[in-house]
Length: 286
Image (cartoon, rainbow, N blue to C red; front, side, top):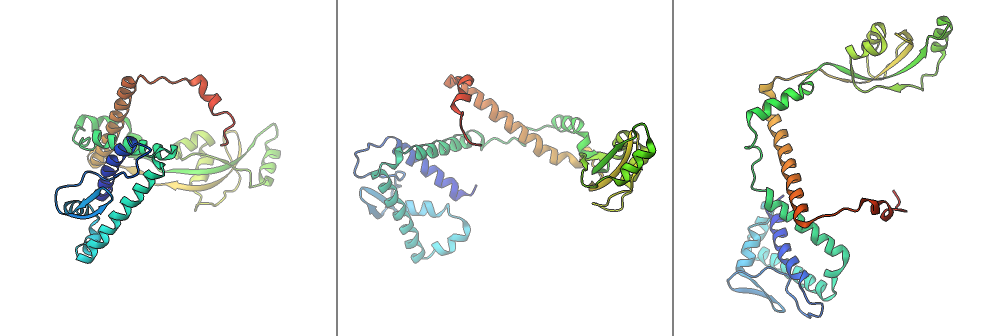
């Protein structure tokens, strides 16, 4: 998230606190953060915008906007944007929009994002990962770092039955549209599943989407179509280490998040009535 977006959320949280506590009968209401000290450059009703406010807000704009806003004319344009924002926000309060359900839900989401940022932004989960964590992950997931070539294929099977000659004829005449699919399988796995000769036929198909002739397998006659090929992958621990560090750090972050939510649930004494949930969702369209 850019610094500008972060600043927007910070200011929005001030807005939220004021909005939620606002009296519905107020005729004028400031939805801006408390102004910094300095010369007043604009007033919108009772709300003042100071030169320090403008300076602060400009400092958090994306760098590509700074050239525009560095000129007097650009600063006037920026001030106009702030004035418009204040006017629209005040008008929203006059219309009592802050009490609309969808607005309050949006406020809750912003608050949730902010509290998570406060809780986790400064924590360095990368630094919390040690070499033992890295080695353990590598050992537990060796198949990801030492994969053999594999193919994803489709096949038809005509079982032998009592008359192999008739089955072979049937296989040759069979439609080539009713193919079953496999996940990625290695040659060893294909051999166990189809038989050595059939696996060899599948592996030797010259290109993706080519269909084989009928070939005898362990339990019938097969035709194969190769859909895709996954190249072999060999990576030792040393070369995989930094990538694993990011994976483990993300896992630790997820675990910390889950623990934090569990603690909040205990504090709030959360109770879930699962028996009521299905009734509440009855009739909902999917």
